[in-house]
Amino acid sequence: MDYQKVTTKDLLIIGNNAKLSFITNGEGTGKLAKQFMPRLDEITNRVGTHSFSIQNYKNFNIKTMTPKTLFEKWVGVEVLSFNTIPENMETLIIPGGNFLVFPFQGSIAEFVKFWQHIHNEWLPNARYQLDNRPHFEKLPSGYNPMRDDNQEEIWIPVK
Image (tube, rainbow, N blue to C red; front, side, top):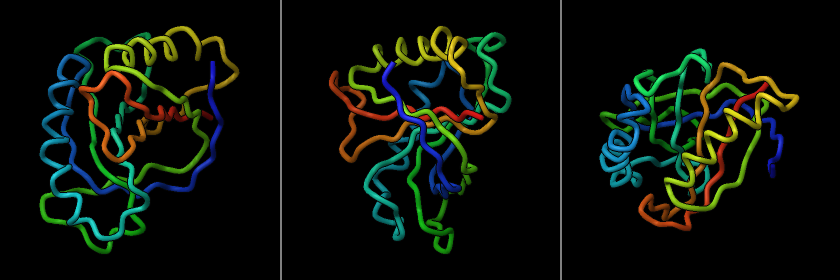
């Protein structure tokens, strides 16, 4: 499994969020992105050109999660500070720490299979333990979920 262990400082995020489940994640994330992405220019102190798709699971446990398990979903960008927050956007701090970063290229369907493989098969046999912090995907500028050759990074918090 190709991955890199990365240690970060706190990540400051401005974006929009909703309560979703694995059942509503696809449609709900699309709605959040359509609400947020046209307003990117309103965020004046961005870090980089990428965006984030964030899942805040609150006590993630793959064995007890069901398709109906609710979590907080965010679409946003990293900023230098929260000095200027556009109207109807919110803030999130992703606490710094260790993350395993997995490169991924492919379709949404392939992403789901890859994500499940990491959490159901690879991680339980790895030397890492999940940490109770948000999981996220770092998406390049121009990301389009309808493409079959998207490139992104999957960031999983570990202790």
